[in-house]
Length: 126
Image (cartoon, rainbow, N blue to C red; front, side, top):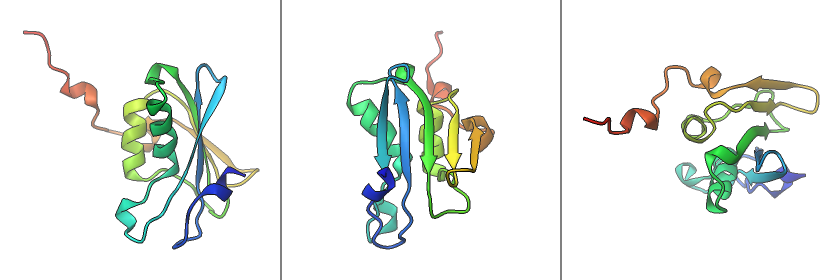
């Protein structure tokens, strides 16, 4: 049902994401929103994470991430989403649903090996 809220005038490729927050007591939704300039579109995964952050949740509040693209033979976050997931959901499981029967359970380390993380940028004490 959430996929129906996606705005996809160019591709007709709906994606929905649900992020568990607050110990799994709430779900933060996100859908993809396309623009005629593809670079300005918004992905469902980053929408869900951004909504949670803007509502005051922190990465300590984040649980699993569920992603579904019902018209796809294969669903996987784009590179930009993988980097944002790495920053905010480093240890959580990501469930990628191709349809109601096929689901792949991964972590960001599976999707983004040898990643660059913000923890590298933290200034070390002298």
